[in-house]
Length: 311
Image 1 (cartoon, rainbow, N blue to C red):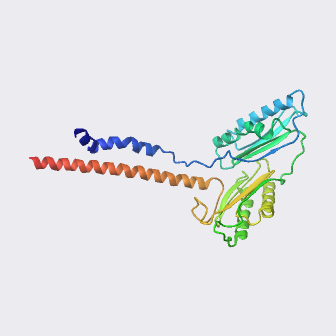
Image 2: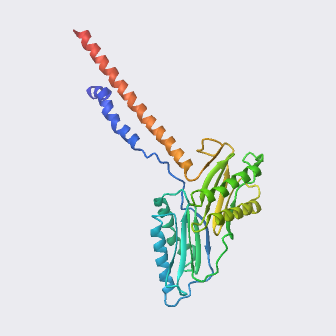
Image 3: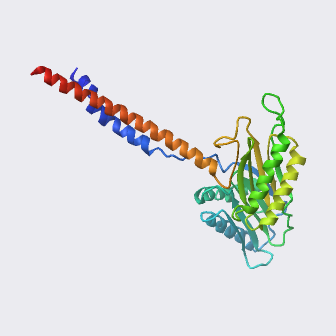
């Protein structure tokens, strides 16, 4: 019975609850981001590296190592490995504009090991697109692909889940596309834009070595490809050689946005979610602490009252 009484002592409850409260306060406020390393598509040349000396293979390894290293410092880099001869290899990587350097590195560093499995050895050119980044390379002199060349597309459903059409969808989509086109050109020159318009979430990005006007033209080409390839799909992703564009329609409003029509160059939605989680966790911890304090105060007053009655 004595042990049971000790467990009911508010002082004991306070110190028992303290580690739990501290744990709640230490819960990270950043929500886990969606996976950035999911494979979207692969592009592998039919030709293998033609170099009996092995210089091209070595240059490719050097190039990949250099690109992975740079991905921990910035979200885009392009470089060439080799002396400029037939064995030289050029390549680049790019991460989504709202990724941190750490997330960018985590994404890009996965690709070198995937190349052998996906392309079957050292090919003359390859491009691997993950959900958060891509990496491409080609031997110097390999046929170049135009920036507006369509590489891959994903078209979503053409109907709402309840079978109804989205009223005025095409007009809303075109307005959202115009936001992206203007945004990539004016967003401090970083060629990346995210925003929402009338329940449509849109994202566009151009390769980091493009000029603002060229980027806008590339996004405009991506918009035309969306209309041709995906029609009235309520979501789509279109990847061109120099840029990509995606959009999703949310009938109940874009998650994490304050209003139904807003624009945010960067990760505003993610930051809004972080603040919400922080407030929720902080409120829970404060509530638990208040309950323990009230129990302690109630017991103290009860003891004090009991002592007075005993005299």
